[in-house]
Image (cartoon, rainbow, N blue to C red):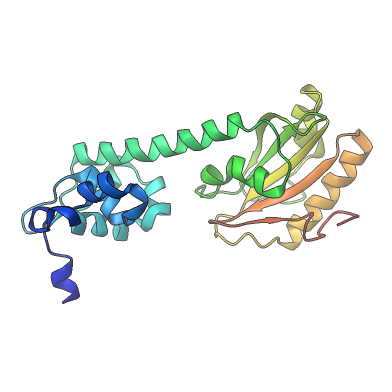
Amino acid sequence: MSQLATMYRIQDLPAEERPRERLTATGPQALSTAELIAVLLRTGGRGHGAIQTAQTLLQQTGGLHGLRKASISDLCAVPFVGPSKAALILAAVELGRRLAVSDAEEAPTVSSPAAAAGLVQYEMSGLEQEELRTILLDSRNRLIRIHAVYRGSLTTSLIRTGEVFREAIKANAAGMIVVHNHPSGDPSPSPEDLSVTRNLAEAGRLLDIPVLDHVVIGRGRFVSMREQGLGFLEK
């Protein structure tokens, strides 16, 4: 029965159960991820409906997380997804990325770890390498800019304090939040993260540009090292 359930064509469904009609009637939140993709695809292939094609697409790319990183050739490798359909999907993914960036640019203040994570999580949770960025803030915790400092495996021997603080000094920042990602998806801080945080927090005190937090980004989750009392003198 489960196999039969995935073989139906959209036109075989009652009108009120078709993804596009349901989206119009109740909004996109009511649709599953596969149904939303099926709306973009419009059709599948011979004996293969749009919803089944969307399910296959998600399986072969590794779900939404993988879809965000897929190339047009990756998408075209999925049965019944040609260049036109692949282009539609990539356009939708890119619009989502730009919306996240736009939201970040319009957020004038960063008053919590969640606000800091929200500025970068959409993009950084999809990175395949570790990357360290600094969120530079003015004296009222308003965002000045976000600066990418390092890419690659982050170790105390690699991270130079001067490089981390260079942009903060140029921007006359009153404080900054350090963020980096774990490509594994698990944001649990490592001993190396703890050592890096201690070094940067101490340097911030000496330079009078306090490191307000170090946020580790995972897949759909983040950890505030200050909230956890890790690497900072006070919790």
